[in-house]
Image (tube, rainbow over all chains, first blue to last red; front, side, top):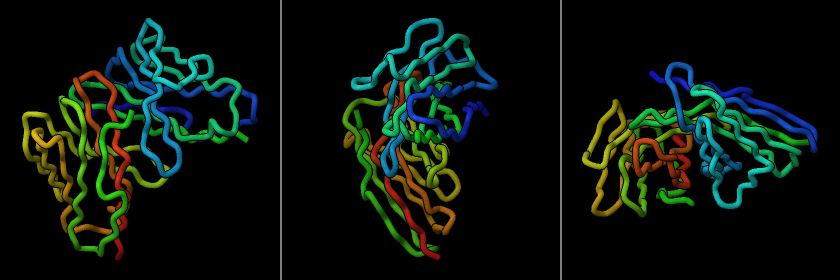
Length: 113
Length: 111
């Protein structure tokens, strides 16, 4: 079946630094990928839609300058958390659609100290 | 914004019992999916049911969909301790749109 690989699975960074998370579709092309965030004991919330070759669209309340998304190829989307703060600590997970289903990466646990 | 609402929020049962979780949503959908998430881990896709389907089975899982009531249920039969996890329903309005997740049900199966 379709596989989406997300890397890294865990990252700890210092406050003020930037962290890049990669999301790859391994055996299919994904013109659209989605980035979600999940805080402890809560559900997944869509952050943004990543579109290959064009700008990402962000959900209300998500700062586009803080969460930079690049979707330069049909198999790779990246999310960069810039100037990370402790409140950005969360579980970030990407997905790619291969109709009718969606395939998720393994998720990235970000801890900002 | 959240669309699905799971019910109950938490469920604790004995091993061997059946677990039923319900999900309601608000708008038209193309399909509805159920996922499992173990604590701190990624999502595991369980089952997808399309809007023109009413019931689907997969092993010990049974999913129903009532589009007139905008609701779905997930039944896990003969539960096992390993079924302990959070379960989420998620809806898609079309094949290439993001999923909208419900708040989830935390299931605890006690051995």
